[in-house]
Image 1 (tube, rainbow over the protein chains, first blue to last red):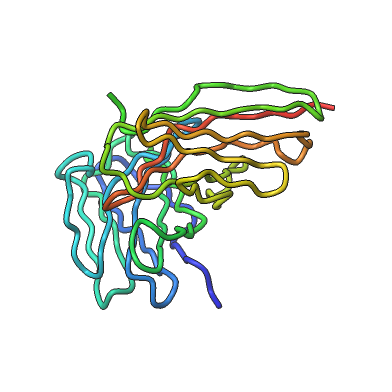
Image 2 (image 1 turned 135 degrees about the horizontal axis):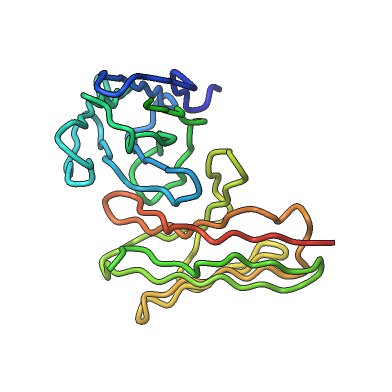
Length: 114
Length: 107
């Protein structure tokens, strides 16, 4: 079966523009996670969904960041008014139940803000 | 204090060496623990889950000490192909990753 799919794989955008990143989790996976990884850095937790609900949004770096999930499936991460410090790889992962089962990652979206 | 802290590394070892990675976590309510491996410019992938009594898989051994909130990964007889970044992961409601420790195994 298909793994976690993210699109686009690469995105170059101008400072100040809005971007939308998409994640298609493995079918049937209830939990979905978003992380940000800057070059040479670790994974920074952004948000997770249990079903369509995000219990804790405190990991989002600023109010320019938002995320939603629909149909317990696809999720979108939106960054408004992008800044250069938003440049990073954005990784999505899904797991079958919740955090105590293996998480499978997509290949990420590499975002470059110029 | 970070929720998950790891040895900063990098670790540069010769083939055949034994290397140990340590990790501490701050949330005493954490329920599940893992080690992931991330190759350069690739996504992380599960290496091993960590069980309460500790567990072993071939050359890899993991330990958990809940009282000290400490997790370890031991790699014996290291191979060139073990070169990667090793990520400690702690889960409660969500999954929190350590910053990772880079390992380079040299001939």
